[in-house]
Structure formats: structure tokens, C-alpha cells
Length: 214
Ligand SMILES: [Zn+2]
Ligand SMILES: [Zn+2]
Image (cartoon, rainbow, N blue to C red; front, side):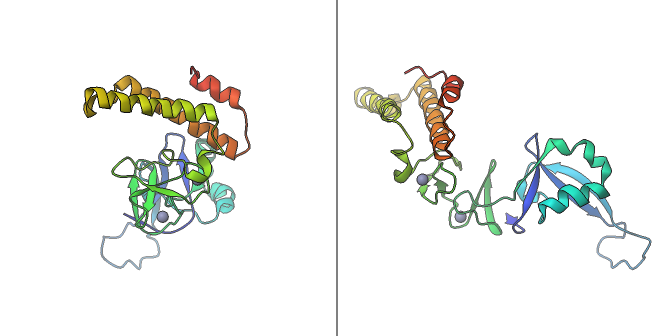
């Protein structure tokens, strides 16, 4: 899929993106020279960020565009201006882009996932797993941004799975319950690591969200 360049897109609170279409009244494929036949604009929401209308000047969009399209003032609160689709690993936009869910990758990084910490350029082979930005903490960030307790709990779950694998065979390493438990703990570790990286240390709130039980 092709991204048309840099800029911003308008994201609706439903997760879809604002797109404007020019509808030419002339017959498709013919040159139109009639000055009375002006293109009509129509607006829609699209699930694909690569189809969204790219905005190059955020302030212009939020002021001048709204002045020209006053009917949209009533709904503007439902939108957020966010960076246009870019590679989750290096931020590159344009050229051939690969998409999965809300994630995008350039060709160089199509098989990589980035470190979960914003701005970190470390990536890992996603080895056929989902394209996501919250599945990996690099060596540089793993120790400084997690506590010994978190690392201990996380590695214990893996040790227990390995023990089950040795005892019962590869198919028995993980039960659904254990998979969910690992996912929950990993989500919490990433959320806390991101909060620590951002200097936002409201750990009590995060603990409440996950009902930390270990
Ligand atoms: Zn990239
Ligand atoms: Zn990192």
C-alpha cells in the first residue's frame, strides 16, 4: 500500500479517519472546461489510515478549514489530529507501507516490531507474530524501566511453562489461563515502563487498573 507523504490525519473517536473526496461532475476520463461545473466535496470516515486525507498544516485545518466548513464545528470534538501513518519502527512515511491493524511499517521494517518505549529505535524480529508496538522492551530499557519484582514474576511464568513442557510435552507448556496471565502481566510491565520513561509515576493508578496480585 502507498502512503502519499508526511503530515497529519484526523482520527475520529471511533478509530476511523477523516477522508474528503472530490466529486467531479464531468464524465470520467474527459477533460472538463465548463467553469460552472465545479467539483463537489464529500466527506467520509475510513478504517484505513493510509486512505485518510493528509493535512499538512494542523493550525490551518483547525481554524481556516473550520471557518469554511462551519457545519463541522458541531462534530470537531469527535476528532483528534494525529500524525499521518508512519513506520512504527523508524517513523518513515511515504513509499510502500505495510499495514496491520493500526500499525504501519516501511519496507525495511515490515518484519520488525519496535521497542515499546517511545522514541527508542531498537527493533526485534517479529517472527510471524502480530505487528505491534507494545510487545518488546529492548535491553537498554528492560532493566532500568522494570522492577526486580516485575522481572521475577515474568520470568517465573516462563520457567513454569518450560517445566510443563519438559514434563508433559511442547503442547502442554501453556494453558489458556497461563497465556492470559502472561499477557496481563506483560501489559502492566509495558504500561509501567512507559510511564517511568515519561516520568509519570502514578504507579498506584496502574496497579489498580490491573489488580496486581502477585
Ligand atoms: Zn521503518
Ligand atoms: Zn528501547
